[in-house]
Length: 164
Image (spheres, rainbow, N blue to C red):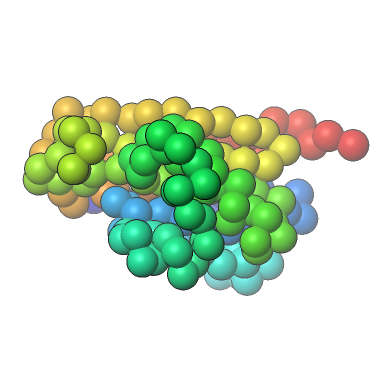
């Protein structure tokens, strides 16, 4: 399995160097994305906050997102991940919003997505939204894979030149 400080180290260093901040919302990664970013000494310079948005109640309390206002949208989808990332970025007033929503396993979710399915969104100077399908039903392995993939997307975006 992963080493939390190593996973978050590059992202943390780049965020500090750039003077940028991040807010995280995750579901099936269970807090590992936030934990990896917070395992780095000095994380308060770039990590403003986040939450494990695992239930409808958590979504309501942490994000104030009402899916009734977004017809056809559902959790574990790219449009929802994008909305979640943008909402976190806006609510926490950060440079970046990073969101993950999926089904870790061992079974799929109620929407018909198989175990190992997640959607990841990054909102900020670079926007990226994508789906990962691991094809694995191992819950913990998927949680680590989702975390690694989300942080890799953040690091890739942070390595792009800063815009004026």
